[in-house]
Length: 205
Image (cartoon, rainbow, N blue to C red; front, side, top):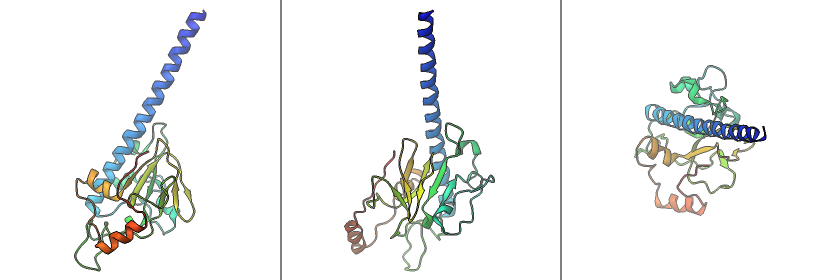
C-alpha cells in the first residue's frame, strides 16, 4: 500500500507540473498571437487600438484618463477569436497601451513636414513605467500584455512577472511589421534624449 501511495503521489505531482507548464505555454502563445494581431492593426490603421472595457470586445472611446488605457484585449476590433485573449487559466489578458500611440496618425514614419502627425513621433512624457527600469526606458513602450492589473497614479506602473510581456515601439515595428525602427531625430534631439538616460532596446519578463 505504501509503495502504491508513493507511486500515486508521484504521478499526481507530475500531472500538476505538466498542467502548470501547459497553462504557462498557453499564456505565452496567446500573448504572441495578440501581439501579431496588434501589428496587423497598426499596419492597417497607423495606430494602436484602445483596450476594451466591456463584453463586446470593441475598443473603448477612451476619455483621456490613464485607467481608460488599461483593460481587456479588444478582440472584436482586432478581428481575432476571443479565446486567444485569455491566459492559460481562462482569465482575460490585460492589455495596456501608451495613450499617445492610439491617436489617428497620418502615417507610421516621420514625414518631411513639421506639422505631420505620425506614430514614430518622439513622446516626451510616456505614461507606462516598468518597475526596475525607472525612467531609463528602452524607448517608448508601445503596449504591455499581462495577466495582472497594474498600479495607476500619475503613471501606469508595471510590476513585471513571468506572465508580463512588454515591447518598445521600435522593436514592435521591426519584429511584427518587418520594418525599420523609427527614424532618429536631429543630432540635438538625440543628445537631449541621451542625457535623459533613454536607450533603445526591449525587455521581456
